[in-house]
Image 1 (spheres, one colour):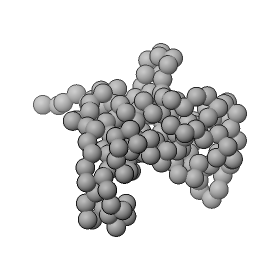
Image 2 (cartoon, rainbow, N blue to C red):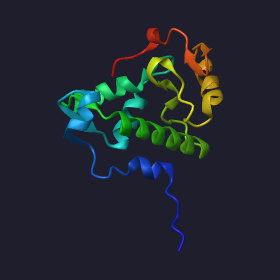
Image 3 (spheres, rainbow, N blue to C red):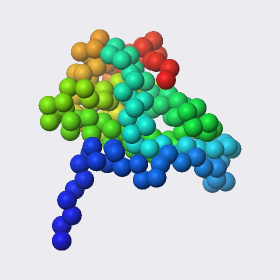
Image 4 (cartoon, rainbow, N blue to C red):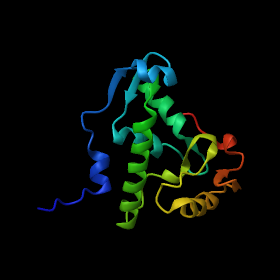
Length: 157
């Protein structure tokens, strides 16, 4: 029997028992140090992304830091935060295509170094258009597309 594929908005709403704060394991500590890591719920990542106003930007690392602070953890999990930002972006695009106006502005969430996330809906080109419409200048550095002077428009969450 075929199972119906979950919609992005359903994936976003499915917290799977998260958030959870766990001790950083020995294997992880080589890379992330010691202390605790928060594994956020998808909706929490979406909420952080929604806080970014037009003309401003945030990096995934800033979202991780805000989640860690919220849960009194040492760090925010890089893997799940990135995955849930991707889910939030696709859910927003799904909602936009259904005519919703107030969707998560995923194009304002950048990777480290101000890099546009090519895995978000519309790829680099789609986001480039949305970002330029908000006054940002997109420049190509090697294979990556970054926002020129992105540091000047970053917000603290």
